[in-house]
Image 1 (cartoon, one colour):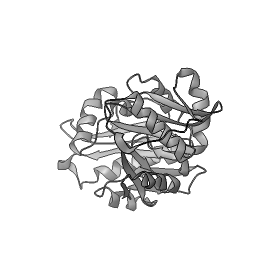
Image 2: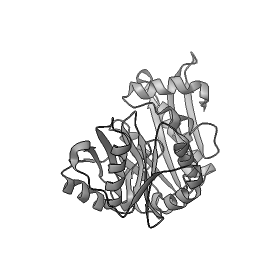
Image 3: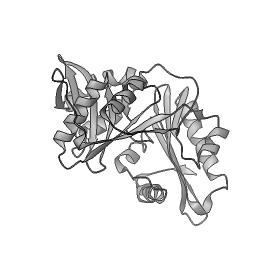
Image 4: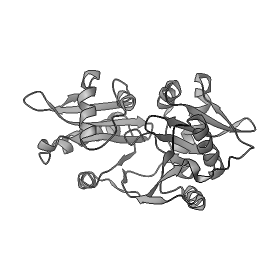
Length: 280
């Protein structure tokens, strides 16, 4: 096992693709060479990368991700060794008291053996362009810039439950992923990052469903080629689920979110979309 480097990105991306995941190269780079994060790979005796996993810390909250083992090396303890290393980094070196991850059905038994448990059913949904969104005219939508970073980080921290300033910095600077800020009377009430090539929207934070609807409407206006947007709401965002159902959007439950350690102060009712699974 060793720490991953930029040179490993193509192989890590291929491992992600092999299990049906999008590569998200920018998100992979976010866990390389930073004190807040660590990505490890396992190589076999032919120097071939056969497993990968990462952890990223946001203060008390740590997120485990990118957990993939090549098919021909599974059930040999590779995944357990990677998870041990990532958990040791997050809980030991970084002092995270709460660890979270998104689990596949195949990975769930491994995480359960390491003390992770389901945190309840999340909600996934796809909002189509023709759904008839009605923006709140009291809310102003604009593109975020570098000068907004301090205010965005301060707004996000108590809602997400951790300091993800450097992730927001990466997203705001990404020219191909427009970052929208919602303001009411000059105060931030939400934001959304639109990934046009996916297409998806996330992270999305909104103080209430009217803000989320206004941001979704703004995303469709900004990206006319997008036909639908995918959202992922945590178990605590019941108002968001009720809003989606009132729109006539089909909401699918998903129980892949797992955690270990006590819950941290946060506002799950404001979370409408994750960044990506590996980053929370």
